[in-house]
Length: 89
Image (cartoon, rainbow, N blue to C red; front, side):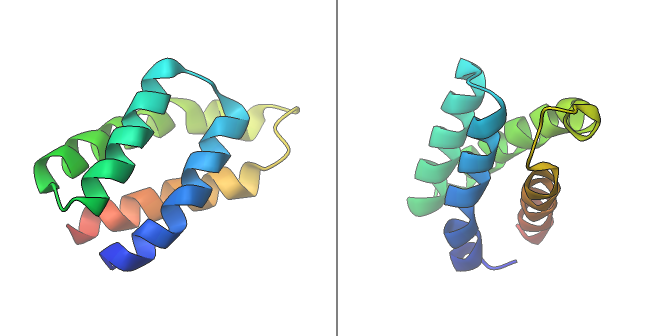
């Protein structure tokens, strides 16, 4: 996945995460990721991206099994995009 495409998708990914949690760590990780990608800071991009992916690794099963989560497909899409971008850098 190209960086430009990821930047376009990132707003949706962050919005999807925010529908599920207001975890201050995730807020910090996603803000750092957005800033790092825009500033071409590869080290911070990888670090923040890995933090977001790790969070999803721990939460995706809970999300998929939670009867109150209405946008499960968006979480799967966000998780997939994060992995695709990580593998491309």
